[in-house]
Length: 158
Ligand SMILES: [Zn+2]
Ligand SMILES: [Zn+2]
Ligand SMILES: [Zn+2]
Image (cartoon, rainbow, N blue to C red):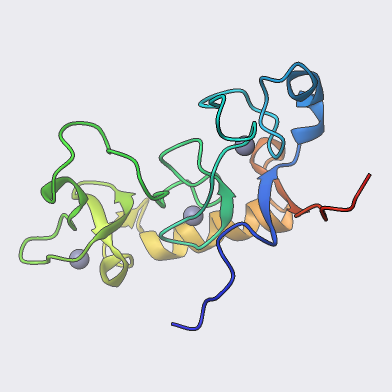
């Protein structure tokens, strides 16, 4: 591994309408990055923790268990409902012990190596994930799915 930059240090992807939530940020209840108020605690500097989607790698606020860009990928650290156990994070294919990285039809969850095995409307899941990811970040998809990159503010910024 050559990664030296902590996740989110350079910035992160946020919903394109993040500015509409400025009132929540001013009131001290919204995340400084995405504007959403959910899951913000008093000790976290009024922001969600950044996380990279396990399936598509999009760095975003870790305020939901699923990736906002690809819609199938998981963000790290969520219980996935039910008991937090090794089983609940394991690939749904029989005989595979890989760590699940995304939700999938029928088998429930899949590891990175099996992303192209489940089908969504006849297409491999990996292809659908890549499509969603591109549409969200390149703004070729529906309005509500669009995301924009917000670079990290410098400490000296006013
Ligand atoms: Zn946020
Ligand atoms: Zn993703
Ligand atoms: Zn697997």
